Length: 270
Length: 270
Image (cartoon, rainbow over all chains, first blue to last red; front, side, top):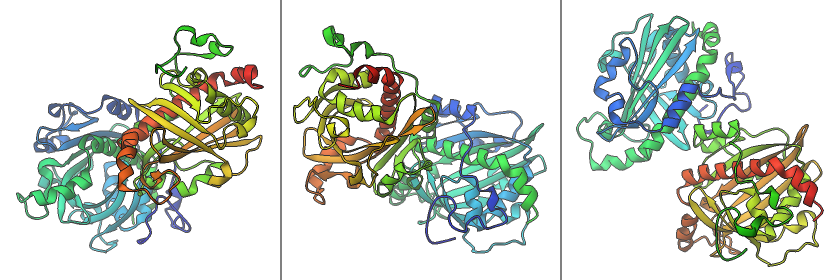
């Protein structure tokens, strides 16, 4: 599944036990996402500061649950909620570990934008279980955000390193540093916080990109002029990219959530 | 009707047999167009490559029937569908020939954006019939796409020259090379493919603009640095222009389709 990049399934791609879950048609965006897109960029103070990232695990909701905009520090921030009936937080823990070793699994998630995925360590790692299957690992992906093809390194980290609590049955946080897959430059962070609701669960996604989050990898504080051109190639215009990222995240999370219970039932013990 | 440029009708403009069809209010965009605008720019591989243009005449639908985005080659692509109850493909063949000699006809189509139209050859050519009334001719138009006023030369070509079949009762393709009306520079291509449906017909429009489609007219391969500034003035920011073009095309096709059957009944033999 490395080599040629293309969208969706071809030839024998569906000839796997999970192939029947590849659905080329994506669900419509939820109304609350459409409303956020109509509102356009929000004032920085209405958006979640990176320093407050851990509050996504608190009870209640943020001032902006769905929206995007540019913060005072020049970074851009994206927040979006996904309502997921019949989905549990544990299903997402499983998904983030399970999908990463096979492009055909990754493509289930966003059939119109996902191109390839592989763990940097090359291992399929079927032995590991739970969040230990992705925490500390790098998922090397290619995908479109809007019309821009990105080669990214998603470096999963433990929730406490961003101030969030350890995962539990009722709350799971998937946290990562985001960077270029081609160059040793990081450009952002995300948290997907999934918590139980009376009918299933809800995911509250938060991204911070650009501005002070651009750093030479493993050399904090050394974000020099030299890396800005690389970072800006990855990030593009902040308002436009933030909007495209909101659409992308809402699409993939809603799409997968619609068949996650059945997928998990079939493959959750893999 | 040459001379002053203005939107819509003034003074005696409506004093023609067809003047009663000038409707200043445009219909709302169809839901599937609104959805495409919400989604924003799509990944290049989800869009129709220029080399696959002829597949618009195939049965079925494309991966992206409604959407826009930037392709790998730097061009931008726009696709949009117009559902047209009670309209036949032949009505569009008639329209593309009939409207081009009179700005007042051209304005019926898009009362908020169309400024002027005339055949470059200066002939009204009432003697010709069918697609031979526009194929091989140049329609010199002024119109807004978004806030940008364009002076364009629409050079209609025969469908087989883009690999499409000859027109039939059930399928008509209106194909053109698009260029500047001021300078000998071409910038794009379009196909409007209209096919019968059980309730009338549907138009599936496809545009490719910019990138390798910028050429000095009649000098293929000579797209030099010298013409890029002219072309980029015409085209603007690719993502923004693609979006504006999608809106414009959806508006004009839906607007005209709403009264096309009556218009054709009255003037289809002219």
